[in-house]
Image (tube, rainbow, N blue to C red; front, side):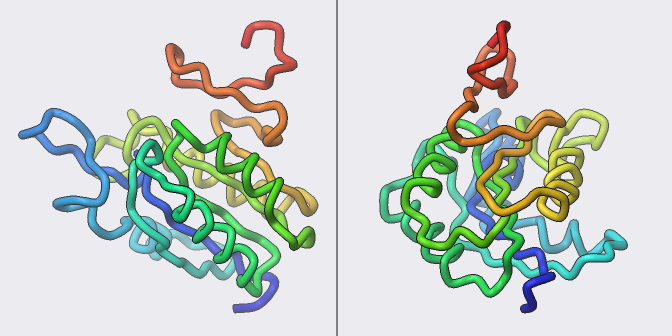
Length: 179
């Protein structure tokens, strides 16, 4: 991997979930969702950037432990890339971003966390925000300077400002009047 490679660190979340009709919900880390669909998705795209994947785990972000978060930190610290994209569940994405900001020793990387409200696979693309968020995050990881960011809903947020409005399924800045 070179510094110009985008290193995608996969942690699960809705973006990598699949619909389980028996449970009437999207599931991660079981059944069809035991391995990420992201490498296959990206293999079908014609990108200028080289992309490398590391699947750390496949979990709902509400199930993450402190050990899981430390695995993300270690993967970022050990990466030879300066451009990192982390796919993550949206429930605790702001918490992980804040943890990374507080605990990463390296400061030469552009790190973007992204996810989706609807899975990438198994739903019609017109209903999922996954492909849009991934494309937006790829553009921003190439565009922004070193730091930690969240790219959701067509906007970039810093860990210090971001909040998720559960009722709307949308991220806002604490500095926005309508958040």
